[in-house]
Length: 99
Image (cartoon, rainbow, N blue to C red):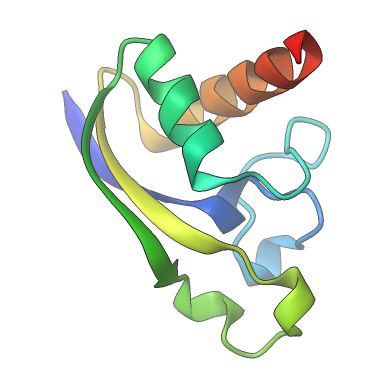
């Protein structure tokens, strides 16, 4: 299993790749919360090791406050980081549709 950090900004559709978005814009979600990421990861069976709600991705230090998203989560996944992020983004979209 791979262990890695997921920043909320890596899934945020409002951000460019320069500012930390990792997934393609068509898969990304707008303003993902750390709670949504945690819920999606747990529902997919990934092990959540640590949640830090107040952390800011260093790539976001130079942009407007309204574009900043705080939080990071450390998880274990059987997949690589890119695939895990795509799966989590899809799950967040699914969870949002249910609400």
